[in-house]
Image (cartoon, rainbow, N blue to C red; front, top):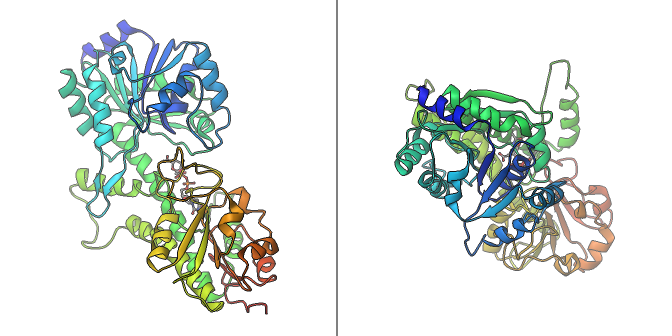
Length: 481
Ligand code: SAJ
């Protein structure tokens, strides 16, 4: 650490102006919360003025949130900070030069999971735009989930190449991974502990200064940049692993003719007393922008950084195995649908399927990497007609909405041979079996429950062929004549 960076930061004083790159699920709430910090004078939300997302600039500058799902408190907070002139959204990246700190919350999808190749194109473009206008003494923070080694490696190189400055000497550089879930963005940022890792102690300290004022109950946990990258990728990998464990258990329970939810309640009863049996929920699959790729970031990290890994050669990683189990669940949903249709004397070919719930998570418009997609594609390939219903996913604004998606539930159910539930939206928890049967209009329609939202007996009781994930106790029921 040279005096240079310490002096530059001292001269700048406290962080007063912040820039946030990426006006999405992570960047928007983060920018609004920074702007709500009393000693922060202004926050710029940087957004490309592209045909697909330029509309966000106008909406945000009107104090409106372009995010569709329910986000408690976000609209009010945006109205407040825009009204106070503390937040503005712009595509003028030259304003980076005014900022004491700049954060990047840009998507980091995977190009090729088999070869562990991430698609860093959007992130690289963001880093270039920051680097071009970077001034000495600024702190740059990556909030995106990234392959371990990226902050001190690729990001440093791009910022130095574009700015002509040196990280750790002329500017600070850190990783502070986001930990948000749709539906509770502000709450998660305020209340979750914040992992903050700099490429050096000064960068870490400046990043702690940036995030600490935003937290209410959460605490800042400082570490190195690489440790922060591993923490983030590992916590999502572990969650995916936990889900894979209960999904495998659900498949076993189906095969053994028992109810996985009884077993789950039993296993979970050992919670507390230091004995945690954190068993999660089985289901139709794992979607979203995080669990579906962060395992591969971790795997790539150990490939890039972990030269002398001691692990049996050729043995598959536990983590990618878990990915494989979760990726199998939509296919299992297809097998359950085939089995239910067969019980009513039908096949997928020429059957009409009402697919309920395109979003990857309940009560949200977020449909990134939805597990419903591989199911739909396989059913179509098998000759079925698939109609998709989702009350949340707006075809006008959601880039992940499938063609023909509908909000007319009766229309989607009308004439269906099988009703297949992929997302546990609250709208589906109140479905009335006799009413759905009337709309299906056939003697013995099928119902396949991928999120445990229906009561099997109620549906079997009015003549449905029922199948449910983990419901071995019901999946072999006799059809009511
Ligand atoms: N899912 C199950 N069973 C469960 C939990 C989830 O099948 O018991 C499925 C969901 O239906 C969904 C997928 O997994 O399709 C992901 O759900 P999620 O609840 O993990 O939602 P994410 O991906 O938005 O949130 C995760 C969270 N990570 C952890 O809890 C470790 C969140 O804290 C992160 O901020 C987020 O990833 C992220 O952005 O990384």
